[in-house]
Amino acid sequence: MDKIDRRQGMADVAQLAGVSLSTVDRVLNERGSVSDSKRRKVLQAAQALGLKRLLPSALHGLLRFDLLLVDSATDHYRRLAAAFVKQAQMHRSRLVLQRHIWQERDPQQLLDLINQPRVPRQGLIVVAQDTPQVREALSAQVAAGVPVILVTSSLPGLEGAIYAGIDNHVAGRAAGRLMSQWVTPAQSRVLLVTNSLLYRAHQQRVQGFLEVMAERAPQVEVLGPVECFDDNQLNAAKISDYLAQDAGVVGLYTTGSGSTGVHQALSRHAGRLVWISHEATAQHADMLREGLLSLVLDQDPEGQAEAAIQQLLYANGDLDAPPQVWPQLRMVIDETLPPATC
Image (cartoon, rainbow, N blue to C red; front, side, top):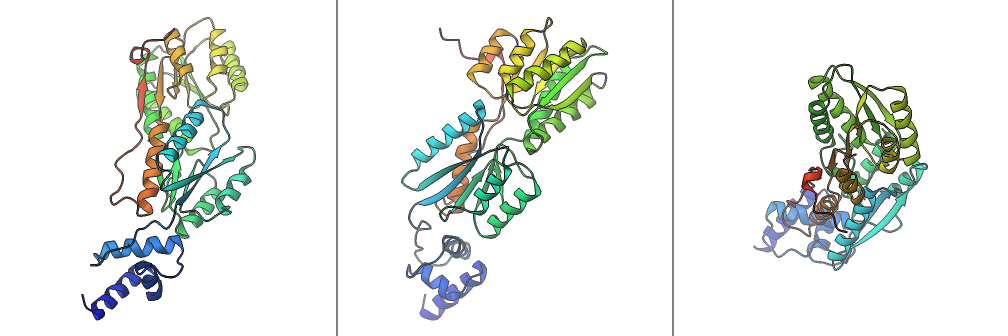
């Protein structure tokens, strides 16, 4: 390729990437300072156009990813946090994972963490409530060239962001399908308990469950959804009240956590309920063996962490092809549990 051809090729890259010709020159010839977002755009454009030259690495030092997790002591978030620690250790030669915690009672913390990074970042992984303010903040990050990955709970319609998680609507429908088969008597009722409905994940689980119950068991009345915010004491009190007042409650679907409180309420109840919940934990394994819990739906937090990191590495040009890993919805019953250890 002669000098004129090279110049035209660089001009094509500049046009596709939406940057100046001088920026393309600095990136491809590795001279001068260019922001990470522009560097990614130039290299992605050069690859897309098949520029016939050896391209520099997309990496400019260690990648810095921000991980924004909600402050929660539930088993799901403990597993998710541990999975991200493992991913960070596996890729420590390529990235730094900067973990931040935001408080549910102070949603401004989440907005500040999104809008005001302490250091420049090349990726953002976030568990977020579905509010207009959060959507606006994340859209601004996408527009600034920061790859955004959502875990545990999606934000449908947020252009440019990628959700690395299970289909929670499908999970709710699965719970409804099984509940509709197990609970059939006329005049019976099922109690639906959820976490905060500010999370799209719980909205979707509730919606899917109600859809299938209406389709397949229209004679069964669904009470709720009752928001208990994964709080053990609130779960115990609310469920106990419903069971004390209504002898027709024969099923329970909890879309979130707080199972210690659920266990307390059901242990005081004279009859047995069909109880479907979420997350494959040691506590739930014991409850399945006990017969108090009927089925668990697991959203694979380890798979979520792996998929999120892989997506950010690909977005930054560290992987040549889109990652193939993805979280898997899993169903667990007592028969699928490993033997209990003494």
